[in-house]
View 1 (cartoon, rainbow, N blue to C red):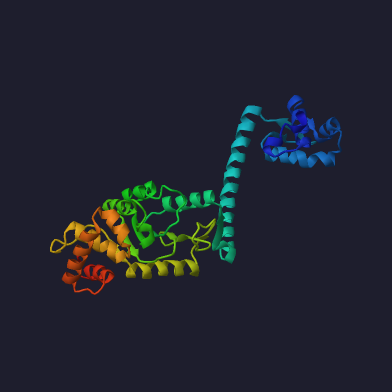
View 2 (view 1 turned 90 degrees about the vertical axis):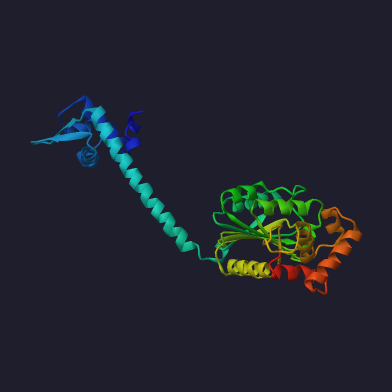
Length: 322
């Protein structure tokens, strides 16, 4: 055990042996200490110098050189404090080096995208991306979904409460799912900005315009892999794509200017028409009959001077009635 006594403070076996000898036999000369530990004077001098530098022993003035030990409690407390400061300084240097290393290696193509494989890994990364958003969340929503609970998004509720702006473009096929339109209206009521396109056929998540996720492939079945994208020209292209689609998409919502001639049901109907939803889905969402829908759509088209139902929805949007 004595051979390893001083290892915790960075000193070796020879220093440990010398220190114990000086501690038990004060005023030993270099020659006496060398003989006691079974070494030559030349071999023990570097160890004695390190012990002096560490404050564990002191050299007594005069010749030949003699040594005495400092009080162990005081000496070891001071040495431990010094070692602690040195380690903290080392940690600081290591952190600086890590930052420099990260900056030097972040420009490689492999660092700009990351392949995320498997449904669980994809779900975890999506949640991390959403929860990390501080200002803005951009989403293109298109089926299929991870699970049957697509009409529930507690993370977005949390983001909206934190003041994060959430803008979502819905594919019309998504709005035709049972209960989906009611879910979207509920999200809009909480503060989501929602729009729709007749056929988006694209999925993406963008957080603060600084990171994104897109499926590896766009197919009918849910992709088993996704690409996480960091700041890069690819991310810029993804954000630009969202902005262009947002401009083309029709707003979804129930609020309108006070001078709008449309009531709430008309606005809901026109929003669905503009989104490209099919008749069956609109009838189911509004709880009306085919006859009622046909009659009301004809009246709205005449009011808006539109030739098609989709055009009626766009005209109402352009006039600020939606």
